[in-house]
Image (cartoon, rainbow, N blue to C red):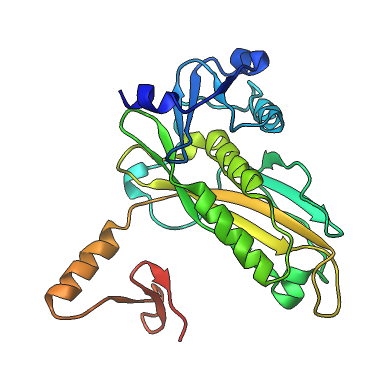
Length: 265
């Protein structure tokens, strides 16, 4: 019933080559809730995907490298923590000379090249967002309001005189990442795929000024649940405390986190 109700909001485009390459996937985008649903079936794709996005998705679908929705990455999901676990793909796009961002593309996870004079390294011209993709019990993968993260990125970029991707470009890129790395989305109840979009001044510069080039990168990592944090918070509040401060795991002397966030003293 949920899928039938949501699908009434979608206008479908058909991409014959995508149907051939991805015979097991359905994409349903709810305009009312801005959630993207992915499920293993046929492959229609919603109007929210542009032809540019379809082309990028096709490049990911090389039979020699692509793993389907019914396969998971080789991880011990019950032991999943909050350390970095690199996934298969990252997303990247660039802009220069105050122009709009050019079409981006997916590529294998790996190092990126930066000038030692780049704005991000010299003047900290950068910002990042964080959002998650969750797997439901029926296998669907959900994104929760990615356009809100896109709007916050845009507002932050404007305050820092940085050029940012459009809302549509941001959301489209996040969806591509969720699709390309969906075998890294933990089983339902085991965690989520943390998606980290980065916007940074990558152009070379000496003085403090808007960078001549900006790079938008997204990488992802599967992460476990915060149940241990919640358990500690519950115990602390039962003893009259308002929250929990966590020490570093090596020396047990330095403050590192408050609840589920970093803290700086």
